[in-house]
Image 1 (cartoon, rainbow, N blue to C red):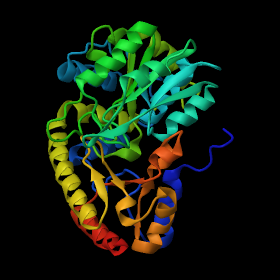
Image 2 (image 1 turned 135 degrees about the vertical axis):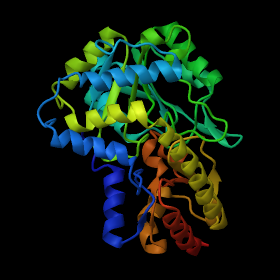
Image 3 (image 1 turned 90 degrees about the vertical axis):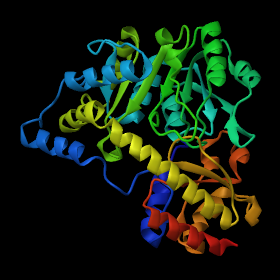
Length: 379
């Protein structure tokens, strides 16, 4: 782990606290999830769900996840052997990479990538092979030839994040077919990070990679309750995959955290079974917040890319005369009283993302309005 210091999220959130700046950096909502879901967690605590739950997860949550995958995507998973509960999606991804890639193996990632991907690949002793997402006609995408060229004799897995943080891209069926084709041709495992599966905008549709021909049997899908139900602090996630992969992930996970909070598992099961209409209203609300933030950022002089999903907007800082996103992000709390995340930290080639910063819009309208008013000072 040499070379991995404090995460950029911890650094920038601490900077927000220290300066009193508005934190549009780290992606956590400033409003609570469904009241009934919160009540379910409290009720679970008060009725005795306070000891170790089963290592694979509570049966009721695994059954709820299985039912959700079937109802929403037509994917059938046995809750007893093909669904596994983790401490958030971050642990699910970490356990999956540690289980399926070893020293010298290669894992393909799409950059910019969520920062934990690089760290866990390093922990596995594996090597990451980045494929760069670049803006094309207003959205970030990849060159299929570059993806194919990234595959080598030691490649074991492709880590796919869609809806994509931080680029905001929702991969199209054609893009997913390109990924699936590479996996089938080279016998690769796909590890998919789908935590924003419900939070897509306009006409973008989240298509799980496992639904494509020949992919269910080679895909380890990871998702969670945090983003869908605005309970990011609960850290309750899950893995769905063929039984041999789930056994491999469980073998690793049991020595990381062993088990996941029992009350939150109960509440997450309730949420999946009862609160999807609430999530649809959240999605509509976030789309409006996205548009609100983009309008303000562009009025302040940024150039922006309209995300198809997630919590985040990529903003190009060059129209304002800046070229170094890290330097600007560290100065922004003093310059404008706002915190953002420099996108370059999510690239192997930092220069490719040096002119982007990421702003989160999962905030109250009045917070967004105050932030963009402050950012207008940069002009």
